[in-house]
Length: 391
Image (cartoon, rainbow, N blue to C red; front, side, top):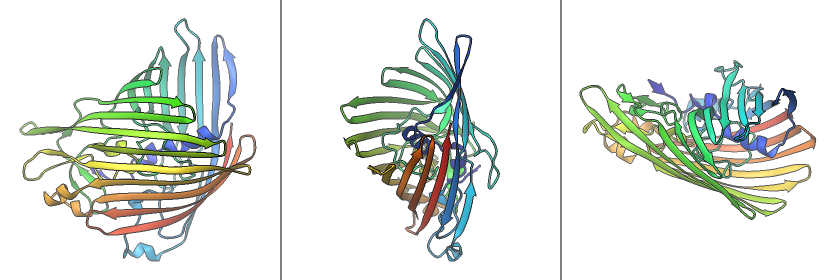
């Protein structure tokens, strides 16, 4: 199976919109059904995009950036408007003798490919007595290192803020979870593709769930989070099998310097992390074509940003970076390893403001880059505006 680095992006993104929604409060519609309080909430968002250089998907994936010398760079200036990010959610809360029992079902319209808008399930989970079961945001990472951007695609280097099936237990600020091993993290590769993706090994298998843990805390004006990841990466064709342990760590923080100035940043590092890092270049691991051993790929990424209050809104400046160590894969002769994506960066500058309650506007300029293992690179500039109505 071929895995393009941006195939799952359109089906999984959310943490950038989550951070944006957190900063833009809304009032849900509530009604009572017996002892249960039900609420409906969401927003309508129009995105207006102009790609100065080559045309990128609505999400602006780094992996789609043409390299220097590509003829697509000669076809400049592309406009697209869409409302795919618009979403609606239904939630319930019922009191019990051991705390509230809560459920959430939420979706948006990123389910279709290309220009199609199809409903997509984002969240479907229940919570009671510290236990969360269903599909929701991964337990690896937090939003403290997330810069507030208009692009639905989060910046590279963040923990993956997408959603997958899991069983989680939370007590105070600490949480542990068993998560779907076949979704976000990706699979062991047999090789890479010239387009920057990878080919899943025919014998790749998922034996154990991925294990994540996280702690989130606060000290004065400092909010912080630390999380970890353990996973098994395995191939087994019935004759020959091998496995390796993948791991990852993440540290994030947000510091309110003054009521008008907030700093945030984070770092993520590990081996075999794969798609648990936003815009992770390449696969979590590969099979050495000579030894047959599973070799996890080292990933390092980080973000940094500042948020400044200005007028009716905020100015946000943020940077994201993610890089994979592919030297061993190239030296081992893994197919197309020299053409695999190695480093992604994003720089975003925007102004987001609210002229009245539940209405927000935004303007943004961003520069994104892509570099592959042989040193070839490319970049793209995007202008983006938004109108958001929350309910």
